[in-house]
Image 1 (cartoon, rainbow, N blue to C red):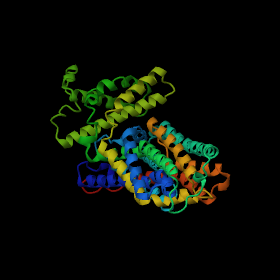
Image 2: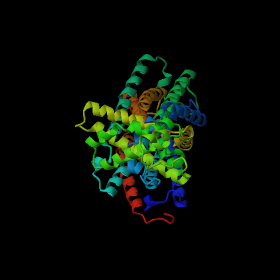
Image 3: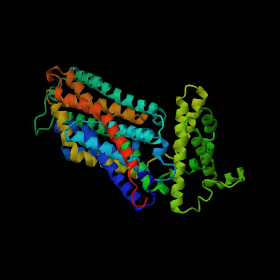
Image 4: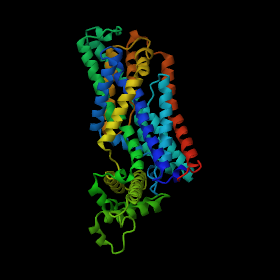
Length: 487
């Protein structure tokens, strides 16, 4: 079984390296789809040549990733059950990583090959749900208790509502522009090889900039959490716990203490494991801060020799401690959803959850840089198919500057707002819907091309079930695969 791979074995390291390559590949395919939407208008209208457009978009994606934080990244990561996210025995989550990346990359590449604007967000969310389903089958646990459905519905609501808003607001903004701008040039189809007027170019470059920046604050984060999962598997001693959160780690016992009565009262079928995790966190806090050991005369069981531990042992200890934190956090989220819990109980659970996050939810700057770099590379090599679809084949007439600018301004607003609020939305869906809204608002455009719209809608509808099924099957198969040498 891949789940039994020894963390320090050559097999484990090889598979984790492959997983890291896969997550880079997924972020590149994200660029095929999502970042291509940001540069579609400036390239199609000849406002910028492809190379400077892609480079500028990549720079603004990078800035967006740095400014936007990591709320979206870990909103997705928390869809996974604690045992899958961070195995309690300290082994790397190899099965989860391979199933996730293989399923998401396959569907992203398949839809890109046919020039269909597809959502990378849907891909990764479907794969995350699939891994959780596979884990439920493996553990014979009820699906209702294995998957955080409240988090799933929160994510799916944002994904479902945002394209509708993009359609309506994009069409509405286009109508406003049509009745307020007297210059006819923004409403005329672009002439091949001829750049638009300077002020039209300026507007389009501005909208490209805003969409790229907002894309970085949202979609650019999605691979960050996945990269962190892989890196933690490769270097658990360095990255399992936030190296910049020394005080938070030393205070884990105190921060987690209020969770004990809540788990006792509202705990589910994993109540016993959660209480053990709370005990482990208390012991760990004493190990990180020896002065606290005076509070308890008996020896600390979990990390008594932490400071003197060998790197391999320390890696296993930190990986196990990470699992304990996530298990307590998962129980606190369940308390917040429990109808029997009082408002005070729910508030206390939310406070504990928030205070524990800092020790395990973080991302080094080099990971953010890698994410932005992969986005830019993917866009540079794969933008043409998506640009052609949005520019030529979505509406019955070609995309104009006014339509592109209207759709992109709305997209920047919606994607940027969602990024800073921690809601993962699809730039692809919003931009595509915004352009569709402008086509419908313009009577001269004669509406949309039904064949293209049907293909896009079919891809949108199939993405979740296909990636969920692929990830479930891969996870289940790999868990039952024969053990490799060195395991």
